[in-house]
Length: 163
Image 1 (tube, rainbow, N blue to C red):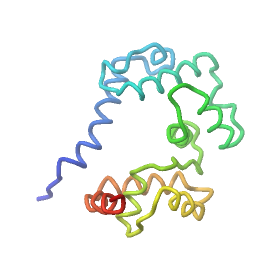
Image 2: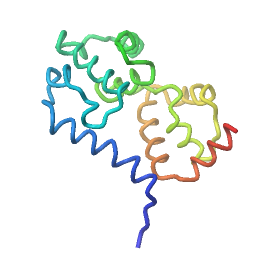
Image 3: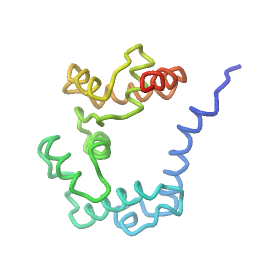
Image 4: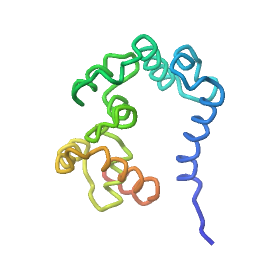
């Protein structure tokens, strides 16, 4: 019998439940999300603002995601939106723009994933280390998130590194 500890289970199921509530409650079209109060379905305020702002940008300009010609330009445009910083911009570039080299800077899950693989790195060291994966860093990020989601010892390693 396989035992699953509550911590990883919660970290995986919570976003899935929230996403299901969002798409069950609101239209999946940008216009439905643009004016929605996503805090009503459990989305934290800062994330709700980012989603709403991005949806408003897409409603105002339906070709919003078709315009950026480079990853750097996409990140620049996304960071101009309220509630969207470098991490969110890289994440959106990974998912919505399918940018293969997007890499959310300073992501704790990426650091924990590396720790689980025996590499204790700072944020700056991870950013430098990630250059060897170019132009496919988004795929590396997804793999590291998968490693992190399955590794409790990685959390202890990261805590030790920070202390």
